Figure 1 (cartoon, rainbow, N blue to C red):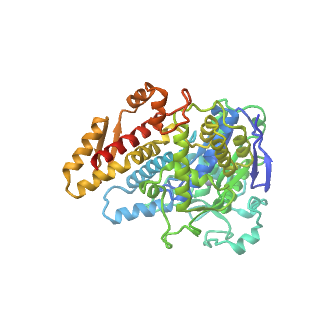
Figure 2: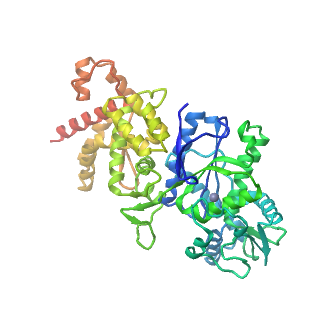
Figure 3: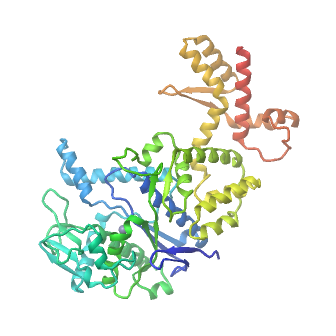
Length: 522
Ligand SMILES: [Zn+2]
């Protein structure tokens, strides 16, 4: 079996990954707070840990990996957004506005992450559906002397957990000195953090032993990971061997480096104090942050954009994914337009090369080696380039697919673009004729294209899309004698039986027709 090595933030070492139960590898990724579109920085952990998920599925088998990524759908930012909607005249009850707002945002999130080729996790819990489990956990923390109730709040007593700060390597006293900690009258110590807080009538709230209120953010992940990666797995009889000897513990917890402190420190403190002796997560992985053209992404710098902004600008999701994977997750990454252009050219070329070629059964061993070495995605992309230069196209396709690239469902952009490119000169001539009100020439071009089986669909924004029966063209090509096939492709080295894809043939055909029409117009 492939030996995977991962850098564990907890030990600060690259370690051989050994799941507690190889029949059920369990991982958790902190998901989004759903009040707005995901920005590009939010997409980095999703894509990086999607590659980890794919690697684990490849090594252990797809049905032997359980992946949980949550939705935080109760949060003050959501309440603030809903309050803005009320202020703007939305007359619906607040709870309904919040539900609609979070449902809509989850829909956007799915659409955007799907476009990036991220597989949906096994479970995507919404925090508001696990309030009962959070309350039980908070009660247990109080009973064990790790939390206290004060003025409708419940706070975690950080000083009661001596290992606090171990993940990020800070001492409690350093944190007090360095962190922006909220000093509130109900806190016994400035570092203590909120497990539960009271809700006013115009805020979402649930009944609890401490009055109507809502959970703090950190307790959500502790409660949902316990429920879905431990309890539900036990109930389903899906854990065995060493996993049962290590209760309330799962394999991998991942997230952005910005969550390491305080969020992940707090998750660890909560979970380990509720279940003394448990390890909670055995391996912690953190991705570094993303910049744009060398600068921190921020609204004030005007370089803040969402995944949807990029998609709407015509940057294909596959291209975004490729750029994100070009930098190792543990290093800061820089999004640049130059990188996006280069990625698009590479992917378009690869798509044309592998079209119609069946992928190898397995990815190239070198790509498994790269990914198994602490998720070296940049190294894996280098392997793809080597597959291309050595002409190993079946391996290129199989290997790219392990990275979530060159998959069938994601390539429409490339097909549309190369079809357009091959007809571009004649389409441009037609557009110019129309712009000059020379409708006679425009019609001649349209009819000539149609005679050759190519129809033009005019789009409302003034662009146009060529359409043709690709299979008919391919059959016509196949029936030609060898020399005419070579002329057709413009490739004198073409040999009978060597792989040629439908898109290669249709593009060659369109280029040929385009040239013919332009010559006839002269
Ligand atoms: Zn979390």
